Length: 425
Image: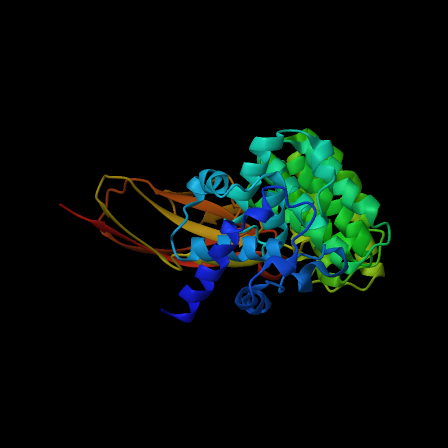
């Protein structure tokens, strides 16, 4: 018999001790264990979770440790399926207190392991929405149950439990912030109870202080993107971001917060606000000596809003127009005598780049600039110039130049060589 099997056998012996019963709230009398089980207990008590929970951890007794170790071991060995946990717990005579012990004895909180869910579900089956009962749980078990309730969409209950954790430890600490923050992250990861997740992100950021309230802006934005409700953006993101941008923060997070704010105004359909607040905060960025590279995204957003308002000159002042290229770099055409033909060229530039005109001095050739197409992913402007070659009566080779006018001061005129060959019958 292997050592692991022997140890498991010793653990299983625990369930055969009649004196334990099903109510474990009074703790476990270590003296009831045979000598060999006392030795095993010193090897099997999980304690790595204490590094995460620290002062908020509730000390666990031997029986709680054994329940947690047994449950995790049976799952690892494939001897206990998650779906059959409730039946297994009933067979072992494990009551509500025992389930709480198992939950409180498991090893980590985040990410919420699959092992947590059947235990939390079994407790919920017994207690339902009885928040008062959950409020009496140890902190760790209480937080896990709050997450479980959040996955069920019980947002107010989640807030109540999370608030109780905060109230029971009024002194902000790194660990407390971690607990609340990871609760929010867990709900966001499952796309459940997102308004409560936003609330928890904010509370965690406020407790952490420093630049963390500014960091929270990006988490609120992500949750709002999932929710898809402009009203939530108005209520949750815009006022928070406007307020926190006044706080100290690193260049990176301050720039991300500004991008989140401008995205919010854009999302709720207020381009004028994008311009007004964007210009205000861009001026603040200069005062703070934030690098232009960090502000590139915000400048693009403000420039695009100005373009939507047909204020191209103002947009060009925020983001200088820049010609990037033309394809093909020369135009060749073949046409039969008496027949017309067409060719196109693609001109690209940055967001504020504009093709203002295209001409050709060759008779019977006309150039027309198409409408601007925005490549949102690459933040580029694209223009198609269509060149029409009218029918000619005489075969031969004709050469000319296509002249493209732009609003890029450094490339105001772009020229392409053209060659047209008219073929006879």
